[in-house]
Amino acid sequence: MEWQELLQQLQQGDIKTLARCISLVENEYPGYENLLQSLPAIHTKIIGITGPPGAGKSTLVDALIGLLAGAGKKTGVLCIDPSSPFNLGALLGDRIRMSKWYTHPSVFIRSIATRGSMGGLHPKLIAITDLFKAVQFDHIIVETVGVGQSEIEIAGLADVTVVVVVPEAGDEVQTMKAGLMEIADIFVVNKSDRPEADVFVKNLNLMLAPAFSTHYNEVPVLKTIASQQEGIKELLETILHQLQKSHLSDKTFWLLAERAYYLIEQKKMKGIDKTILKKEIEAAYQKGVFNLYKFVADK
Image 1 (cartoon, helix red, strand yellow):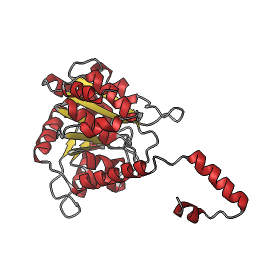
Image 2 (cartoon, one colour):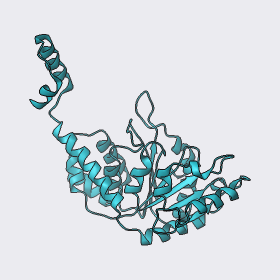
Image 3 (cartoon, helix red, strand yellow):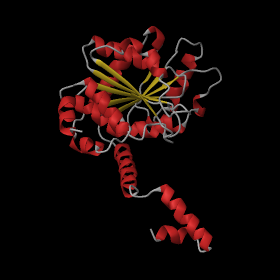
Image 4 (cartoon, one colour):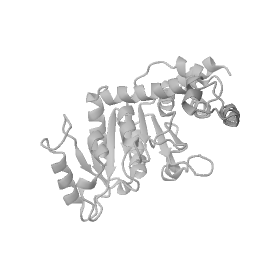
């Protein structure tokens, strides 16, 4: 595999090469680390979209893509889909909603599966977003499944985190996950044509008031009806404004430290074969001398 040639094609904006490189990294093709280690430091800012299932995140992203494409911006979109329980592949629900952009020359959409990752994000997400940056998109959007610890991870990865919620009947703001309250740079109340939307927005603004909030900056709360394109232009303007004043946060470095820990752990475990471990443990058991902790200490 000629990794340097792939890198050159990436930097020339070749989308087919990007798709191929993502697959090579996802599947840990031998030597893929060489490509990642050669990537230039490009600081394209990332827009994170998260929130509970059914909030209309994909419809919102679809509407944002429309505005960006209309403005001539090159946009890369990563959709983190739930894994199929049978083959660990992405269920591709997002592709259905965004199908009209699939062949658009200035839009690249890739759905990747969580593959059982406990965080709700893909274990190679940082690497894949770095591949996107090498292509030098104007904007990169990452949409998450919004479960587990994904909201914490997306806050570390994204330069601006948009939390999408819906005003459900009887759903009080106080019951909203604390993690979502803490990481939002922008709140979007989608499906705001519902009758309880105004009360929901009012309660959300009260919760975000300085006396109760841990935020240093005011968090905008916007109303949208993504399916009808309402409020999308204002949302994009707010996102771009927030991107201008965003900076690296402590959350970013914690996320990178966690990923570095994971990669170092993987590297150190490379020579360990579970099948051989099992046989060694069986042999020690048969001798009647097996102690798990001594066994590990001797490795």
